[in-house]
Length: 92
Image (cartoon, rainbow, N blue to C red; front, side, top):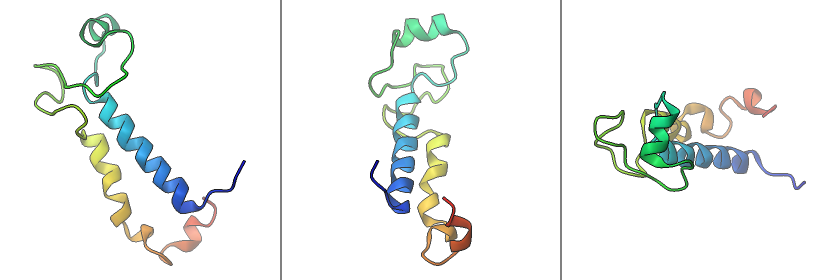
């Protein structure tokens, strides 16, 4: 397995978080699996709008929920700056 830099690994993790959040926007917070299947089918394979009256209603497919906004601030974090908190990141 090729070695990847810390920056590559962090970038991949953030991209995965953004993609997962955007894919989950429509079907987020269904507690009844049958209801979710009626609204979205058995498999979510594309970005979807939330249904009216559901959590995140009014947002559009591919937008970030509150879970996607959090990772967006990580690159601006002081710990994302070179040399800051380096000893804490050395084991990542």
